[in-house]
Amino acid sequence: MTDDLLTHVDDVLPWHVNLYEDLHRNPELSFQETRTSGLVADRLRNLGYTVHTGIGGTGLVGVLVNGPGSVVLARADMDGLPVREESGLPYASTTTATDPQGRQVPVMHACGHDMHISCLLATAQLLAEHRADWSGTFIALFQPAEELVAGAQAMVDDGLADLIPKPDVALGQHVMGLPYDTVASRPGAALSASDSIKVTVHGRGTHGSMPHLGIDPILLGSAIVLRLNAIVSRELAPGHFGVVTVGSFQSGTKSNIIPGSAELLLNLRSYNRETRSLLRAAVERVVRAECDASGCSAPPEFDDYQSAPLTQNSPEVHNKVFAAFANRFGDKAVLMEPSTGSEDFSDIPNALGVPYLFWIWGGFDPDTYRTAEADGTLSTTIPGNHASTFAPVMEPTMRTGIEAMTTAVMSYLAKDANNA
Image (cartoon, rainbow, N blue to C red; front, side, top):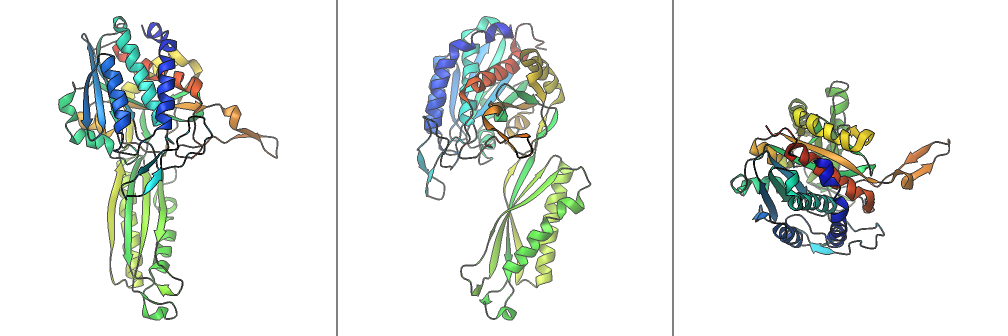
């Protein structure tokens, strides 16, 4: 049944290629995806879906009931990033928008969300136009604000569970820097948890020529940065994954002024609850100890301002879907290495209490980025997600994404599938 459905991919490709170019040319920032959401909603209605809009701001779902069977939810994210595009594509974005701080910023689909939308909509069209090939209920969910790690929870908090039948399984995918015919999945930890913390330390300001009269927060902050970088190497057991990054260190305004405070922005990554707790506790211990050692004028402040959940794929869902991938893609269906990236997709199935699978697929021709090194070897440098040059090759990236999502969905909804 799945193979029969996928013979119609060529029928849906032209419309979705045009949609992809339109979305890429007209990206929207997180929680501002009004135009994108409208295009998706109109398409789903035209295909016969029951559509609910405005969930968590600009999120929406389309529900298609087609007889008895499993209930499958598939998700795509919709937001772009404040990045100036330098891809050179004929449909490159020149869009600007007002960010939450009121600044005019360039906007680009630098993470492939436009590809995610196009592929999920294509799957939705295939299912709507070939209902004889499957039975059950399909839910196409389009989420805002993944880049803020906030959109999934916003949809949950806005009553998503009351608007849709409870799914038996949730599915999601992401285009990444793999060859464009490759699909990769894994059971268990697939994407890391992520925690961002703003740390403020308080010294005592003084003239730069009189450091003995102050408490230098820049010296203090520097000691904190060095000590934080020892957490992973000296407090985690060898072979245990963890990342502690200081992404920003802001203090002072002038060369001859010792400022009164410093602000550090930290990001932590982990694959399990124990490591996550260890890293967070170690950060606070190190910061407080260094502040005490410097005789700070006030205790440090910790603002945990952004977190992404661990993406922990269900082994049972992985086994079922990966078998279907292997049947479809052969040796191009591979085991995914655990990624250090993070996602908020799992907030949705976690809240709904259903198992899930999140996989990646490739968007690049590796030969295009392969260069000869001095020692005669070849290296491949593919633009990473969020880069200003990130530009998946249109074909066969879109075909692979459509086939992967449709294959995963049909592993539950095909009439010859086990829909127990």
